[in-house]
Image (cartoon, rainbow, N blue to C red; front, side):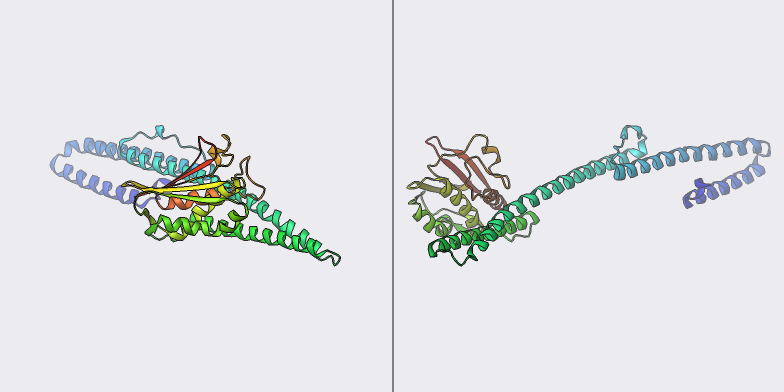
Amino acid sequence: MKFFRNPEWKASLLWHLLLLSLALGAGRFYAPGSLGLLAAFSALFILSHYWITWRRYCKLRQLSDDIDNMLHSQIPIRFEKYREGELSILENELSKMTLRLSEQAQALENDKQLLADSMADISHQIRSPLTSSNLILSLLKDTGLSPGRRQKLQQELSQLLSRIDWLVEALLKMSKMDAGTACLQHAPVSVEELIRCAHEPLEIPMELRCQSLAIHAGTGCAQFTGDLSWSTEALLNILKNCMEHTPPGGCIQVSYLENTIYTQIIIEDNGPGFDKEDLPHLFERFYKGKNASSQSVGIGLALARMIVSQQNGTLKAENRKEGGAKFTVKFYK
């Protein structure tokens, strides 16, 4: 019988039979006339005990089957069926477990969808410059090209390769952030040095556009605790976004201050600003707004927010009242 496959049941039955034998032996010695009544009550007690235990085991087996169905078929468990006192703790823990498993399953499904979408976006972003590069290479093979045309094609090819290199580097940095393998230092970072390091790679492009950078420092020497190189990457992406949307001859303004709560950096430009429909999605990966340039990939601001968030900070984007974009970075103490 399946009932006695459990060794505890066999040991329990032997123990009850032993107690029954002892009780019958004592009853035969002390009260021979009540021997039958004692045997009947003892047998009734054993039967009722095993009947109650059998029903409890049936409920446990049903609960086990329900959990198995939930794990393999995503069928929800109706815990209102399990209301016995000794099963209440088990019910509570299983309720937590099933809720956690459901959340993990949903999170895994969302991650799979996000990974699929990201891979499609990445392949598209890399395929476009690669296709253009192959086309330019085929044109450069023409021996009849004029020197001016050849030089222009070489410049375009160099720009495409630089774009692919930047894209791959940015994706690798975002992957490190997602995996939690990016080792960010926790050291004092001077805001003045941070702005200088972030602006340095953009000096020539801004000079070609006749753009200027105005820095307004607050009182004292502002600093925060973080990683200089990663923070430079974040600020560089913000400045690059402002540079691309600032008209020739425009000005990008950077102001900063430090108080007892946070260190704040504000970056503003006098470009067209953000469209209202784009504001909620600016920091989403691969999102390109209506005013985005043709060279925009849509990961610079997303990477910037990830870096700032990893350093106990916040990054906010909004439109200026006077026109243009405004980025506010806060590193909390």
